[in-house]
Length: 300
Image (cartoon, rainbow, N blue to C red; front, side, top):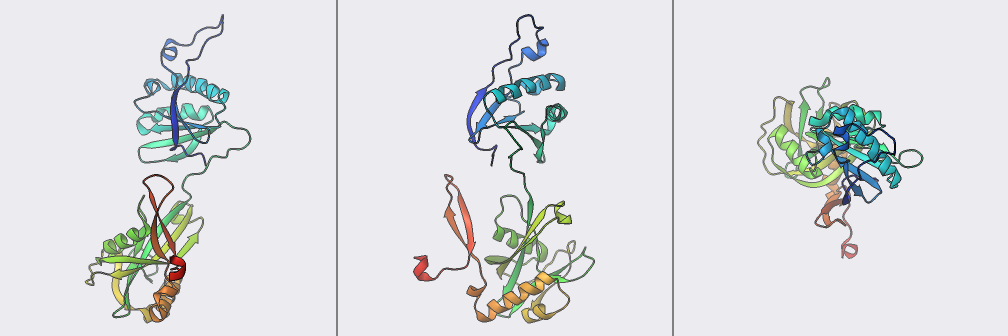
């Protein structure tokens, strides 16, 4: 993967030279240093058109000439790809970059990233995000055998389901489940495990991308319902057996309710994928690993 965020060193391209007898370029172009870029460990170069780049003050035509020179330089140096990060304030340069073969890779709220494959053969650049992650929380009160369910207000079919929603950027799965449950129902809870994962492709609600839907088991920390009337039509504590057998629910909710009922009766160790945190290979970072519990003799 050609990750534009992993940077090795900053470098400065030499200004283009003119051949003998050749007309020099426009003064505004020759007076501006060529594009500055940062190399990544995969052999690509990443350029950000922020205030540190002299080129950000150019008009689109002059910028395109600088980009042409830079592309020639990158190819001569054996670079295999170029990443061009364009702030929304500099969006006038997008058409110039497209004219030189750059295509969109992704866009954020304040910038767009374009790419150009410089290597041989077809592009091996990685795509951007292909999935969205939805998380639901099955809050089970083990003392009463009841589980928290809602009916979405804007659905055509008023089926019972577990409260949930989309995970925010950099938000852990369990944190999403706890947050969404609180926002929709007013119930505080804590994460216990992952129960199931659904994968669906070409999802209309994910802009035609793929969708991952993860259902977590949560334990309640409060019990008084105060549900969000903008999102929910109904909210209640329902007997788990009733949820597992009713026809007024979604197929995935019915299936997970049966799984939850099995764990409730036979032990949650038979259904839970619990979480453990470990240090990542990247300095100062950690990751969370979800799996069934190991026997004590293997754990140690």
